[in-house]
Amino acid sequence: MVLERLIDIIFIFLILYLAGLLKKKFGKTISDYFVQAAGIAVTKTEQDSLKSKEKIASNEKKQLAKELAKNILAHNKIKLRDTHDEQLLEDIIESEVYKMNKGTHL
Image (tube, rainbow, N blue to C red; front, side):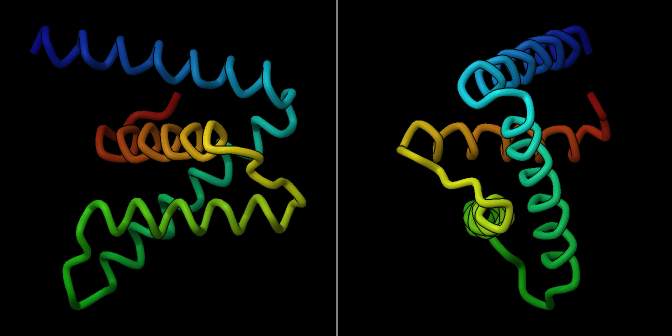
């Protein structure tokens, strides 16, 4: 129980750190788009997975969520510039999955 709480606290600080990186690198508006796109992509991918008759592997769901998030960002005329941006998006997607699995909302 204590270990779970400690992991939760560390994860919260990681999310705040990532949010700070986004705001520093892109500004508040674009960082908000990253977080929103990741949240929408994770939710949609999970819904599609639940509707699917076949089990979708976690790594495949992550890839689907990443592609959907990139499409959402592209629709808003935001392009990922380099591998650092790609990794940042993946990290945000993972944090959204973690929040969804834990049922927490930061």
